[in-house]
Image 1: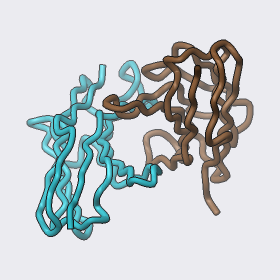
Image 2: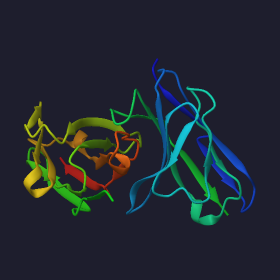
Image 3: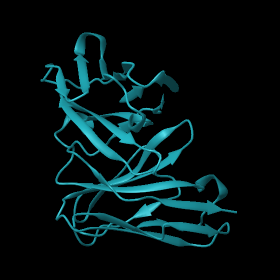
Length: 112
Length: 119
């Protein structure tokens, strides 16, 4: 089954404790992207990757890191999470940009 | 910089009513792409349509239709004879080329419109 998977789905952590949210797709897509969703703000792009080893900032990259070492995986790293990074995070992929994107199920992160 | 505005925060209708969701965008590019996505109460995001800036033809898919007007920078979405299953948050999004090039990686979403269809 074609899908984008994210782990974990729910995470509660404390300020400053490094964490990684994994994202994996099995559709051989070139393009992958991370978004955060906050009430009243819609979805905002954090980082995207046009293909392996090529990543670029979206609209809200501060406090986040990404890496794209292999086509299928695109982890999101929070080196020192803060409460303002409490949000719902979505990973997405598409054959290339800008085509129909397939979204993962979301990761709800709470930073206390 | 690209911008998408969905001025309608929430819309409430009764089943079988027609409803139009507005989307206005800003871009300096002549080549760009517009999208609509649906997020039902279950939370997943579902692609509905993509339109490029050179294709101003209206699109109809069942009860859904889209009206793209470059003159007013709008890409509105109409649901005809709405149903309870149409209740969702709907997002409009825009992708323009980065620095006038050919890379369309950046995607900007509107704030979303919450549509509630009552039985």
